[in-house]
Image 1 (tube, one colour):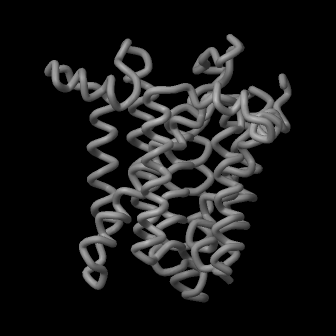
Image 2 (cartoon, one colour):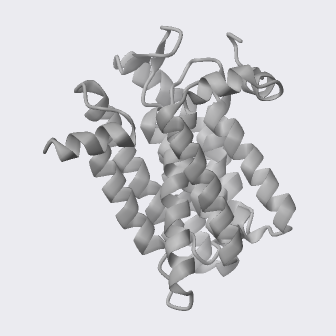
Length: 279
């Protein structure tokens, strides 16, 4: 019954997500996107609400029927994803409306000037959560530090990617397919299955510019991606390669425009435009 959380989250998201997005817009919670269109924001909350509803189904089944409903490590994954989602929501509701700096350079420059920003709060909070989730007494210090780095960097990278509709979710789907096919393991997929349904359901609304993920949504997707990576890449070498790639993307995003790179690269540009209503 490994598939139960994935199916339950998909059904819950299909029922809840459109209503959630309409509710945000009706309450005036909207934000202009890159084209100046006013879009429901932060729609990333629609990634968390269906997950909680799906837990009402999955948790009793785990306790009373079949312990295979929830994979080992699911609890820690839940703590990390929901913790990151809450940090992202704080940043969306407070940080983005107060003229605070953006990007790690901006946030830590502000910290050097003795100005606390929600970005610094989010970065420190994400590090703390990652240090707890990655902790494993049976693993060496190198594996522990690399797993922590992968979690934090993946969370941030998907935030950097979320500058066009659907981009973060598309990269996430490609990453998940690659990890599953490359490793030939389904256990990591089932562990994060509870979060996949809402991501898949929200993607069409993101592409149609009905909903904007915000830091809440992009950070949640990045957190799930990070969990998927450390569950799949268990070797020190694999984790080191993943951390290196994520660090390079982070550095590039701090000094250059990822959107410009995508738009100038054949193949990436077509993939980025795929499904977008205003391509």
